[in-house]
Structures are given as structure tokens and as C-alpha cells.
Image (tube, rainbow, N blue to C red; front, side, top):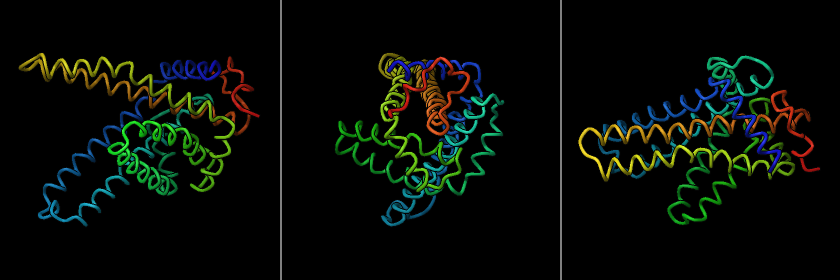
Length: 262
């Protein structure tokens, strides 16, 4: 717990000094928003689409895959620039896009896996809402090191999964703390954001509904952006120590020997 908390605090310091890293979750959200609008237009504009089960299945499957690929692409870009930052380089949006593009084809199979798991988790959420939280945490914990292995080590999906499985045995506790902590951090601004939205919808009227609700949405979005950026930095710290047993300079106060179970 102590070493993981030190990593999280150091990750927050890096994010404050390198705010460029927060741009990747923002761009991911914007891209997904554009795709959602495009999907809605397609469903509404194509005659008979809503009445065709087969066509809807294809559209839903394609939207899951494209959405998963977008998330994977931008997370890969974030991971690459978090790695550059910890190595003393200068992160940039362009550099992240270039690295993610280089891994573009290799990311597609992993995006298909993510899309399938996301669909199954959505099904579980409707049928087993309580257990879905456990399933979601388990998935995030076990897959925590797959993308860093693909982006930074050039692994294919099978190779990245195999190495991530080995990493999981060594740092499963740190994976859990990293996933859970960043999730809790996102709740800090999300709770007041949700309260503002509730107040806007139940207590206000006129233009104030839109203004207050929009502020609430921005609070929630800010929490998601910060959590995603912190998760990327945390992933890279664990990755560095797993691969070459060294801590980045910014994390010099963390005892690396406490990170890996031997």
C-alpha cells in the first residue's frame, strides 16, 4: 500500500508538470463523441435499418469495435508519451499519435478483445449489476500491462498477454491498487458534478438548468480525464520496473523491491 501510494503521488506530480498528458483522454472522449453522433445519424438515416435485426447486430458490433479501437489508440498514445516523460523526454500529442499509429495494425486484435469484453460486461451489468463491478475490476487488473507490452516492447497480442500474465503474478496487488485508486480519484470531482446535475434537473428552471448541468458534466469529465492520465503513468512505472528493474528518476523515493513479489 505504501509503495503504491507513493507511485500515485509521484504520478500526480508528473501530471501537474506535464499537462500535455491529459490531452490524450480529452481527445479520446471527443473522438468517441463524434463517433456516437455519426452512429446515431447512420441509424436514423438508413431506411429500414431499425427493423432489421441482422443489420442492427452488424452496426452494434462495428460500433463496439470502433469504439474499443479509439480507446485503445489514444491509451497507447498516452502510454508512449508517459514513457517519454519518465525517460526525460518532452511529450507531445503529435509524438503520441505517431507512436500509436506505428502500432496501429497490432492494436486491432486487442481492440477486438476489448470490444468483446465490453459487450459481455454490459450484458452482465443488466443481469448481475452487483457482480459486474467485480468483473470490471478483474478485467482491468488482469489486462493492466497488456497495452504497455504492445506499445513499448513491440509485442503482438498473444505475446503481450503472456508477458502481462507473468507480470500479473508479480504485481497483482499493485495492479488492484492502481486501478482502484485511479477509479476513486475520478469520483472526487464526479460526486459534486452529479450533485450539480441533480440540482439542475430538480431544483432549477430556465437557463440555469443548462448552465449548472453543464458545469456538473465538466466536473465529471475532468475526473475521468485525470484518472485516465494517472492510470497511464502508473502503468508505465510498473512496466519499467517489471522489464528492467529500474525506477524512473521521478520515482526515486519509491522502494522498487517492494513492488515485485519474488
